[in-house]
Image (cartoon, rainbow, N blue to C red; front, side, top):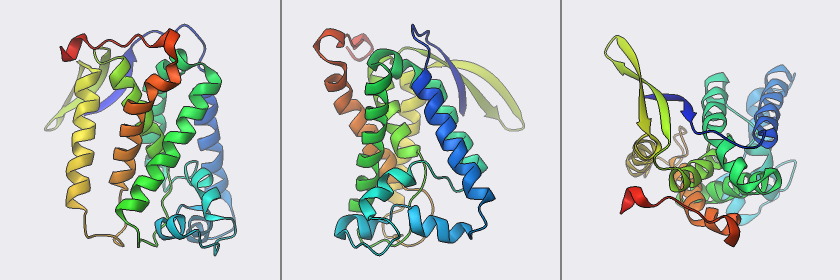
Length: 229
C-alpha cells in the first residue's frame, strides 16, 4: 500500500515543505558525490544512540549536533524517496495550519524526539541512525489528528496487479503506525543488527499527536474529532 497524494487543499504555498525536501535532496547528493567513504560519513554525522545518551564527544562533531545532521542524511535513494514522498503528501497541510516557521520548528523537534526515542529503546547501540523518517513521523501524527477523514490516493497491490483507491487518512496512517509497533516489538533484542529504527518512528508519531495542539495555539485548535465519536 503506497500513498502518493491526498485530496486536502491548502491556502498557502508550502515553501517550508519544499525547502526541507530540497535540503534533504542536496545533502544526499553531497553524500553520494563525496570522495569520502559513505560508511565514514555515516559514522561521523549519523546519530549514534550510545553517544546521544552519554554525550561522548568521539565524533567529529558533538553527539547532540548529530541530531540535526542525521535527519538530513539517507542510506539510499529509496530511503530518501520514501521519506520525501510522505513529507510532500502530508507536510504541506501541516505547514498550512502552522505557518512556515512553526512548521520547520515542529519538524525539527519531531526529529529530535524520534532520535532519542530510538536511543532510549536501544541505549547500547553503536549503529548510526540517519534519515528524515522520525521527523516525518511527527508530521503523520499531526496529520491524522487534524485531518482523519482526508482522502488519500493509495496504490494497492493485489498480487501482480495494482489499483488506485482512496482511503481516509486515519486508515492509511493508522495502518502505517500499527506496522511500526509490530516491527518495533519484533526487533527488540536486535540492538546491533541494523535495519529500521522503528521506535524513532513511534516516538516521532506520538510527539506529533501530543504537541500539534500546542503548536496550533488557542486560535487555531479546530480539530475534527467526529470520526472518533
